[in-house]
Length: 554
Image (cartoon, rainbow, N blue to C red):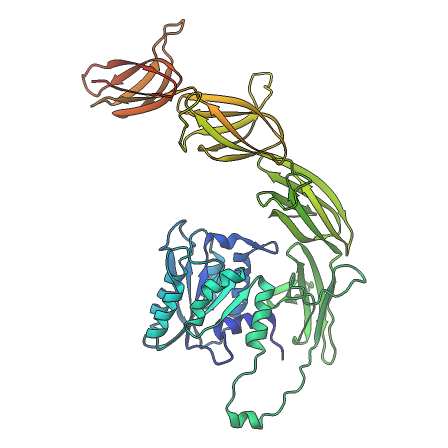
C-alpha cells in the first residue's frame, strides 16, 4: 500500500535510506529568523511544525529520537543552540510541544549544532544519526564540510542527512557536504510538496534490500487497492489539479454532527491522491495555498470507493509591483497586500497565488507611497497584472556649512515632509530615517527634506519623479561646541542673549563632566553646577558654521 505523504516524511527523517533506521536519531531544526520567510504564502516554520507533527505520529515506539534547535532564543548569537528534547523512546509529544512554541529570531550556527548533536549521541562509541533541517547557510564562521569529515573519521557509524528547506541549488551544494562526507543524503526541498515528492521517489518507494535467497523466493505483491480516490479542480468542469502541491488535504474522522473529530488521520499535499481508510464517516478540510478553504464530508464503505471532490471556485493571479509602468522588473521592496473575503496575505515584489472567485483587493506600498486597485477574478481564470506604485528615492546627505565639511553620523534625523503647510504652520510627515548616506522612498511630487543633529536643523525643498533617484544634501549651517567641566554634576548650554523677559534659551544639557552639541552659529553661555557648596560657574563660547569649538570651565 502506498504511504500517505506525512508518513513519507517520517520515513525519510528517521531512515533517509532504504535500510533500517538508526538506533538513535537527533533532529536538528533551524529556527533562525529566516524561518519566518514564506513559501507559497505560508511561513516555513508553520510548514515545519505541521510536518514534524505528522512525523512524530509515525515514529515506531522503540525508536530513540531527540530534538536540538538553534536560533530561537536570541538575535545575533552563535551560541543559541539548545538540546530541546534528549534522545529517547516515546519523545514524540515532547518534541511536538516544543516545536509548537518556537519563535524564530536568530542566526544559523548549523555546524556547531550538528557537532553538539553528535556528541550527545556518543557518536564515537555508538551508531548515531543526525537529521539537519535548515533553510539557510552557516552564518557563524564555521566550515560544515570540514566538520563532516572530522565526524566521519572519529565516528563508529555516524551519518548526517540534510534537508535543504527552501535553499537554492547553489546554496544546497554548500551544505550537502555535511551529508555526503558522512555517507548520508542531501534532499532539496523547495516547498512542502517538493519535500514529500523527493522523499517518495528516493526513499519511501525505493525497494528495500533483502538477502539474495529471500529475493529469489519472494512473491510479487498484488497491485495496491484503494478505497478512497480524492480529487479537486480550480473551477467547475476544469481539469484535475492532480500533482499540484498547493492543495492541502487534512482528513479527520467525522463526529455525529459531521464536524472534524480529534486529530487528523491523513495529511496530503496534492490536488488528487489515492488512499485507504477504515470504513466510517470522514470530513476533509481542503485548502488551496492556505487561502481558499473547503470542507468535504465523505463516507468509506466496504467494497466501495469513496470519491471526495472539491471545486475551489477559484482563479490564479500574478501581481507585479513596479514604480513606473515602464519598469521591466518587479520592485522587491514593494509590499503587495492581496485580500478577498476574510483572507489577506502580503507578498514582496511579485504576488503569485490562488484566489477565490470574485473581487480581489490589491494594496501596494513602497515607503509612504501607496496604490490600490480592485480586480474581478472568475473561476478558472488566470490574470496577470502590474500594480504601479509611483515612488522615487532620496539619498540623504548633510553638511555643517555650505561647501562642507560633510556630516558623518548615524544620529542625524532625516525627515521628508509635505511642501505645503497646514493652517497651523505644521507640515505632514511622510517618512523618516536616521544616518547620513541612507535613502528614503518618497511619493512623486514636491517635498521638503529636513535634517536635525543635536540642536541644529536644516531643510531643503526638492522635487522627485516616480522611478527617479536623487541625492539631496541638507545644509545644517552649524558647528560643534565641546565642553569640559572637571568635577561638574550638570552642564547646560544656553544662548548668550536674553529674550524680552530676561531669559536665555536652553539649547541642551547633560548630567556629565563633558558634553558636546551641534549648534547654529552664534554666541552661547555654558552654565556649570557642582554638588555640595561649590558655587556654579559660567563660560562663554562662540560657534561658527563648519567649525569645532572647545572650552573648559573650571
